[in-house]
Length: 174
Image: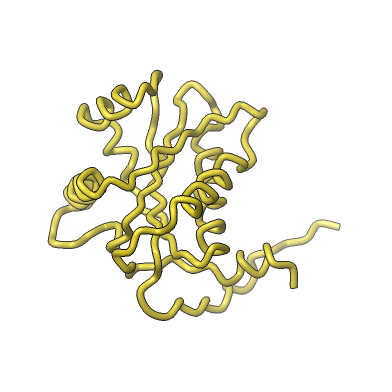
């Protein structure tokens, strides 16, 4: 079987990560895979904020947890790396483009022996002054909407097995 298709079929969302930081080269490859995602009219309307700083990662986790309703849960499941995808609000396809960036990064992480999971609530986070200021501090100009967090790290335990695919999801017109 083709290796890319095999990766697509075997990749699963990981919900328990080891605290070990992945190699910087692997993180860079994951990010680059995201940057090569298809995008509308070649506009490349999505950016990635790579968070490996534990203090900021933990702050993001706390805010994300508050948005989803609180409790004592790490929404990033202990992953030490959070790659945040943001969409340029002036680009009409940017949310779709950002979704493809997320998909590419999740597949790249899996292909490198790392686990990943897509976590939502980036939109709400980046509406907050604190995270708008973060973008400004990074030199990011313009209006941006959070698409999602790609939490990445080494999976703790066995990889989940894929459930069977639901039937009757493809219709051919020949």
